[in-house]
Length: 307
Image: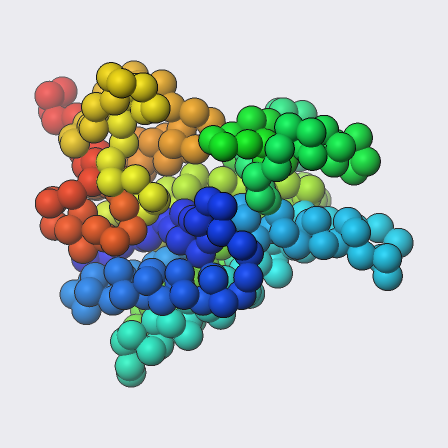
């Protein structure tokens, strides 16, 4: 079975953790352990988030006295693909000796007129107090929004239209490689209508929506979205919280999930199932094997009542 795995940014850096390399290395070893059992029996394509990492690089770039201007987000996104891709490749190589593992810097086409460029919603970077966020907003011109436990920078998150390297990913899979690609949703680029020339954009694409598009293009059998909670929940954060164990896309969309957290995950899963008739699931990283085998997580399945 071909499975596209979408790892949340928390797979490398949990909330409140220091963004040290040693911390991320320890977390990625846990990722490799969770995915190794799946990789024994299935063909995996692995995508990952990059919110904490790109936020850290953006902060460092903005305060580097050697630079006349900070690096744009699309270049920082490419840097995170290399950083996280290397960590994942090494950890998976150690967990699965003899497997061919390829890490591919991936670009994702977006529309230059996407309204998301005028409405930043994608969280990047670490948590700040309200006072610190206000100071950074005034000094850097950044936009902040409240997240669980504090305030985080938000940036534009246009909708992914096409993954530039899809054919190359097909070729790597055909050669028997496990592929790590589309990190951070892919480097956001627009294409010139006449020449096809690519131009990087100041944005971060949601990795779950890109994963859904990638899974559809690769004709995957399963989209697995891994995060830091065991299920999708109705009324999350309230005393009425209830886990959703099984849902159709329509039932999932009937819920209310925040744009900055579970919303894109549920939309990605619903979109993949609607477009392909295959299965998707959302759940905790450590339960990856159990989720695929129906023993954990939230399963999203086609609505068969109309067939």
